[in-house]
Image (cartoon, rainbow, N blue to C red):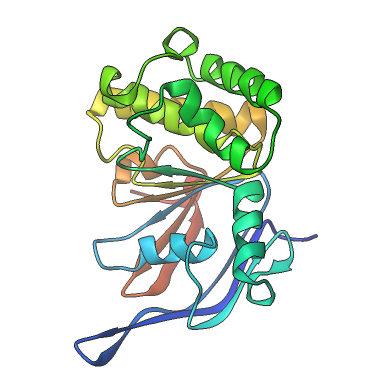
Length: 233
């Protein structure tokens, strides 16, 4: 069976102060369709760099990343951008919504880039905003929405091109505890009811407790990879 995500001996090195800094050191793991996984580690462990690699936002120094069996190293930049737009949805800590666009426009944007017709993207955006509980806020701009509502718009946007994989970077990090819990419940519902695969980058043990699998990263290496039911926190 083809893994949804697979990394093989993944290395990422940056030059800092004229010297190489190895942030990822031979990372190997795979994620199957429908998994709900957290990647957890302290600041500087390499987890955001790893998300950039598996999300095709950056290229590794060495090693391989496969998405649905496709080796990203064999694609040019335009092909990678197209695959990323079709196959992956992103949710960021600070929402990254376009301030001048209303919620509807923000959700439609990835579809416009993908060439979806105006009528289809309008209909799909409305459905997605209803799915995340914001059907009556479609004409509101980000400045008119609470942090939790902005994150719901970001989730709807991540789903807009119907990707199988959703990558979330500190998805509750900019939210209060109650709102963060609501967002985690929403993500879990999308995992169960829509069959979406989630990889959550986090440093928060409470977020990890709401997932099925925990990959622990430290100093650029995987130090633990277990199903959550087997963990004692």
